[in-house]
Length: 393
Image (cartoon, rainbow, N blue to C red; front, side, top):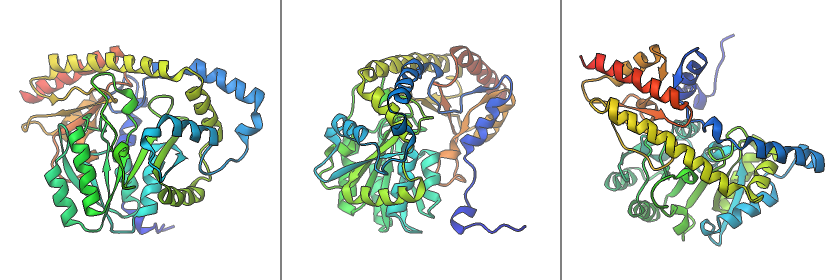
């Protein structure tokens, strides 16, 4: 049969990251391409105990339908924990991971052809969510401290039908950088001036293992123009699929209707698990534990990069998150390098996958330090070092 697909879907391609992750099953493959939490970071014993208690004491609550907005005790706990993000007109909805926030926000706000302004590079999962609604993506160069503000204003002037600015201010995926407080305020003021919203994606904020916290853009939203996306995927479990959005009540109301059409509600069993773990007195100690894991793993990878890749690769050491963004010199072709690395059983993600226009030149690639073991990090960097030395010759 000749299948005819919807116009908005026909041009979508599989995620480059998901395709690369298929190589993870190849025997001996060292994956620096994933974005998974470290296996040792999962609170397996605590969740097993909570799960047993749930099914012993309240099994029907875990197995029955629930409300679309989310489990009320979890919503209340999040409102209390993040009260500094909630303005007088804000509400909160529980979602199936932060990825669903991208989908629901775009579905609620954008018509086909509307513009979404994104950091360049930016997270491919969000870019594909935006593309699925036939939004036009406009990339703004990312500097060491966030978006180039002059370029952002130029993009806003040139695109009067822009609906929102998408930013990942903490340990950006893929670049690993943090947007400075000065630039966060500048982004907010420009959004206010040009009448667009901001979609602030913060899945990595709780992983900070160095440096000082920087206030969220949402924390100084006095005009009801910021949608804040949070997630427990990186700090409890991605498999539970529990995220949340904080936004002006009218926006949350529309997102709720869209979610009813999409999946009715996020897994109530997962919400019960997250609520009990969040409020049971173990969460803060758990955060300290995972921060220490990532501090050590990031330090190991960065020290090896400095020792063995520095003649060929430049990078910024992140203060949190899961990723290191590496840039090759002009004389080395990035795609050829990535393909050769996979052939030698080390997978990295081509930087072009994170661009709003993948055909644009890019000489960077993304690595991940949370997923591989320490031994794999050491061996993988050795392989990349030898490969780059051979290419350079």
